[in-house]
Image 1: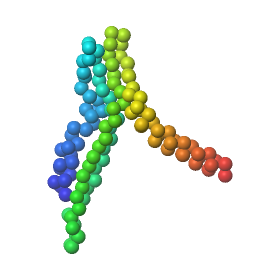
Image 2: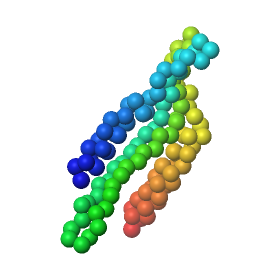
Image 3: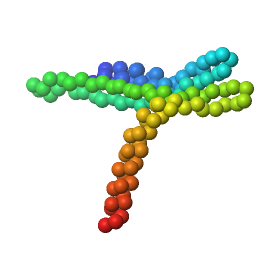
Image 4: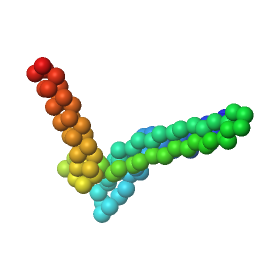
Length: 109
């Protein structure tokens, strides 16, 4: 079990701010920094008790590009990736609508 935890911890070192913000790129004299929404999770297994077989564990993550910070002569601006923002916003809006409907229903009683 400790080996699994150590392996997952080693793999998780690369996650975090470096996964959310990419390295600065120069495109035709314009500097940009890509930005992403990242999340990840891990699960552990067990060695097994008695006749039970041991079970494994693992982890995974997702990175969704949401846009880029672009620096030009006029200044710094954020240029969103509209497709990714819509893909992220749809579930959020759906959950918010369901919660609001439930709240209104509860307040009417």
